[in-house]
Length: 199
Image 1 (cartoon, rainbow, N blue to C red):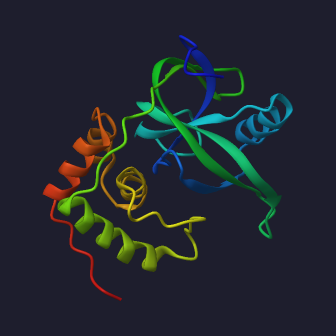
Image 2: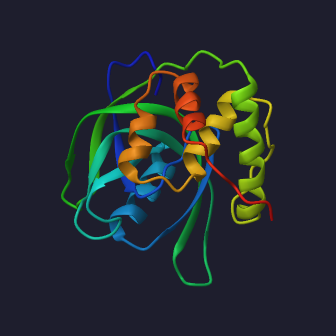
């Protein structure tokens, strides 16, 4: 699967949270459609797409996703003490959803276009302030959420982690996701004047 493809098929997993390129997410699966999806991903050595929910819930009848998401690959799995399938995924690349439909097992299958990599974003004073706030957020969420390397001097990494971790309402988060550059996203986040209390 490459960006040269005009459109590719991906199973879609609508969630109330997002994962961005370079990020990780832990999922606990109990619905048959998603367990079968994971088995198929292993069999075909492919990933799936995670989208933010626009309407509906994470479980039950298929939800309506926002038309943007991130293709993820499965990096680890096991059966948890709760008997559920636990998987860890890594965010690979962003995509736009061209169309989607539920299959016989009520799994959403999307026709998606992988988005080109964004030009690197330069650090500036406002982004350094956001990086300091992200550092505080990471102290709250670790070890439940952790990264192999905290790249607080990388503006794009800072942007992606803030989009994942900030508790914004889905419409507000989607407004940021659909922006054309991480610089635009970061400028909008800086304008929110986010306050994080020291632990």
